[in-house]
Length: 147
Image (cartoon, rainbow, N blue to C red; front, side, top):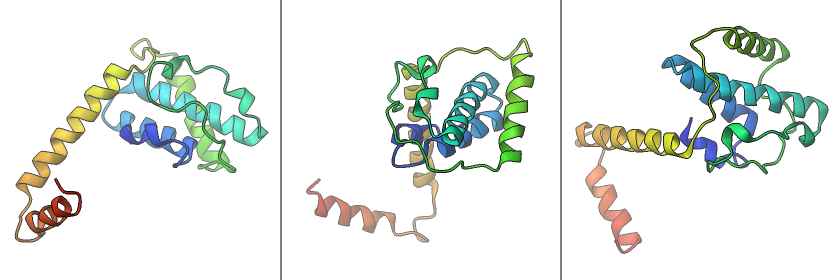
């Protein structure tokens, strides 16, 4: 989900920030989850008001490749009740001393993307090649693109 944030615009922004925030919560990166869910709430408010002007502050993502000038989705990804749950989690997290509110950096995103890439490569190498014709498929791809 974090790697897909750079494709906001092709994928609705509110959905991606919500999913990325949830992924961070699941692996106990509460400070990153806070930043991502806070952006989700800003987006949901902007969608409800149909006003991109509500998204003035981009400082949490300023030096990253996460797009800022994306189209505003036509409707919210979550129901009003689910949005309220996210809002309550943000308010509760803001009161906790262990949740920092540091911006997301490009260095951190690169580190995450590198780890994901390594893990995917490892999974592919360990996968039962008899069940999935990876080698044959790779030959076709290499021929197609003259690699």
